[in-house]
Image 1 (spheres, rainbow, N blue to C red):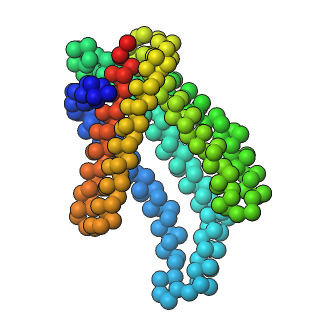
Image 2 (image 1 turned 60 degrees about the vertical axis):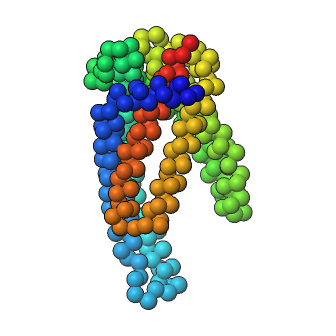
Image 3 (image 1 turned 180 degrees about the vertical axis):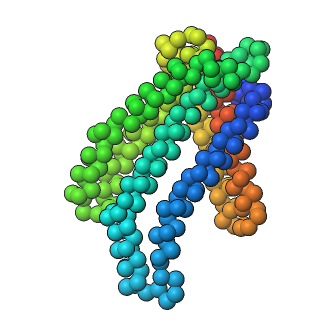
Length: 269
């Protein structure tokens, strides 16, 4: 495991400029998403009675907010905008992955980083696999969403409803996680010209170290998020802002290091 982490770190350092690109990519999407949420939430919250609020005024605010969300075009416009943002991100992400995974392969072979070349040469098969992966992950929603709706109206309380759906949600998350790991190996095989079936075979051969390595990085990411959240709660002002901006860089580093280490797991025979 330590050897894989070291190899992944060396490959990550070779792609320093990709780290900067990922950082700017996350920063841009974070800003766009923040502005989107602000444009929807702020006009509603501005109607909250700031001076001498009482129970009746708060209840009136909730009624008015519910009316604006459900009886006007506000919710439809927000969902359409959110869907468009998600679609654009699902177009850009596999293109970046194609260049990165292709570059991993050639960097390890001693040919230097080739992200732009990888985008030009292998973006189509990687994008196809990415969309197929997401389709398979979302497939259980066809059954789960109607079930959740049916139980929502039949359960006595919201807590009972959530508790009843928890096992299905956990199974869905675990299944989606395993599908993601398998398609990760399939994309590695595609960019290295070894074929999709090789990626599937490597998933079963190297499944355990891949799972353990990925869980390790997930733990690191969760620990960092917990520490960052605790610091921002204790300190405000410039420190909180600086830490928040730095967190995008750290998360980008963890993402890049994870992918590089996963590539070396795939590469092991």
